[in-house]
Image (cartoon, rainbow, N blue to C red; front, side, top):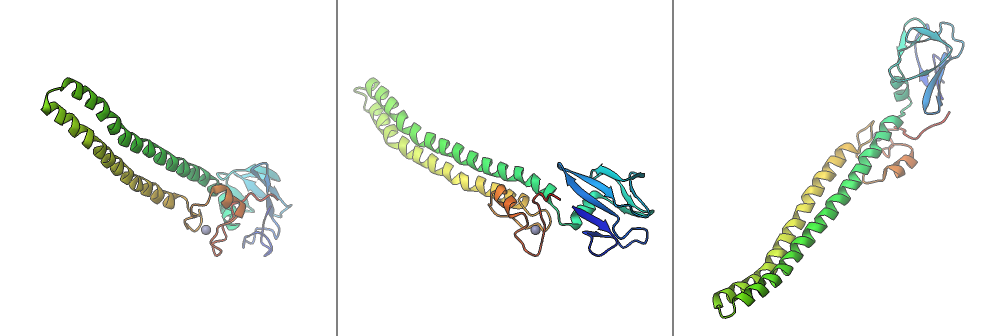
Amino acid sequence: MIRIGKADDNDFVLNDPHVSRYHARLIREEGTWLLEDLSSTNGTYVNNTQISKKRITSTDQIRLGDSCHISLPEILKSKNDYSEEFAILKEVYDHYVQSKVKIQSSNQFKIRLMQSLPFALPGVIGVVLGFLGKGSSILFGASLFIVICAPAVGIYLGARQSAKVPQQLQDLVNQFKIDYVCPKCGTFLGEIPWESLRNRKSCPVSSCRAKWADEEA
Ligand SMILES: [Zn+2]
């Protein structure tokens, strides 16, 4: 619950002569926000209609009394509530983990293919050439050459492929460091699973004080 009014002990303090000491309150209800007027002197308005109790969204225009305009995001920011922004980070984390696994496994496959194919190939070619080339020392030499060289080429290709991974992974990690940050202070949250961060309920930077766990009234 977020209490709104002129008195200092409200969660959202407004210094306006037309705002009552305890003017209104916001209550979290089934994932939405309910704005409730607390019998204020000058009334609470949502989109220019006076209300006593109303579900509101971030696009609604809220007015307390004659001239005090506020919005839901403003009120939530004052409470350091970043649960909405934090929720989006789950996708960022999941995407990162999935991409990482994909890069690694597709690369493992390519490396194995490149390394094993040349080993299988010269066996076949060698046998064919050796058979056809019975008596031909040139063909025999060529097949011998392939048998010896192909594995070396395979090892080379495999090594080159495995060198590509760090670059791809590095790009992924770099992007992750830009995207997976505290919505308030922008600090990189580390390779910590989203669920673990959620259990922490707030930003690891103690001076930031951003909260993102669902707080029920
Ligand atoms: Zn922070």
